Image 1: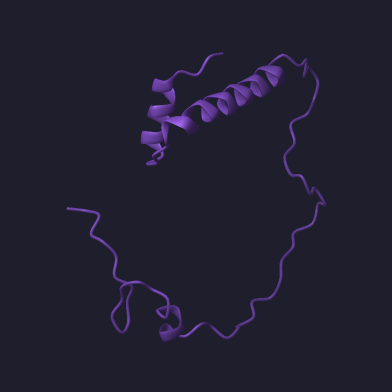
Image 2: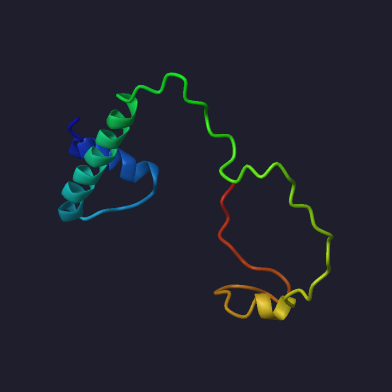
Length: 96
């Protein structure tokens, strides 16, 4: 399957990314390889193969007791924040 420049532009817009024109051709080639992998999987005869439900099917739950641990302080959390006041991170407004 051929991936067009328009498809790459659409994927870039949906993912909110910008790519130089030189990289778009490389992305198209990689996307074509990914689609080839899916086509190869679709061509396999999987009749009678049970679906994998859990890769670590031990049959046991891994429950543990809750333990309190020392948490990071507010001042330490805000230490590398580009914008903050004494208590909160400041972020740009995203909703109207």
